[in-house]
Image (cartoon, rainbow, N blue to C red):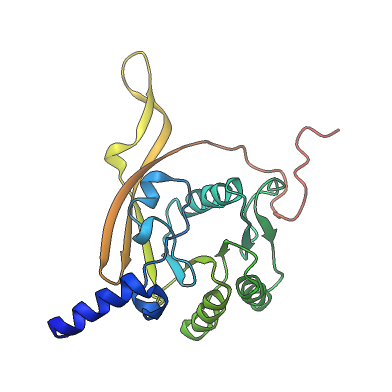
Length: 229
């Protein structure tokens, strides 16, 4: 592009912002409320109107994206979570809208309807397989709705933003015995890589580690009746 063309483009951007092609506009990302996470995302947040893919193994993704949903809700916006694996806890009454589809196809349909509605600032999809054709359909839906869409998925799928995460065992925090030996894990540290067109950044986050007793009911759809007479 010639210098004259670049000068004209900059002039149009200042005087007529709507005349700039969509690909050239810098729209503010959807802030998650996790400052260390937002700082490595393009435009300081999850992209709006375009898909984000967190590649498996998505270490810490559930914890971070659920915290992002709570941050979105705290700002007065809506969030939804499609739990295709049906493994998340049932205590989400005060959290995002939770959908547990019976089949993967129904889950994809749920995602498309939520995204195109424009009523949800953030939609997260987990546990539902998707190929490139399906992702293109969802990309069109999120573009039309204008919200942010994050999915945790296997394989390599095209996306406006790609996230990868990995443990940093050397930075784990342990409670110590009186003799200085590691007794119990208190927090884990992970690195998150964010990659987009012309963008590549990494951050580290520490997440608290909590152990849970084994459920008496193996089926996540059944009530856990521990302690109930």
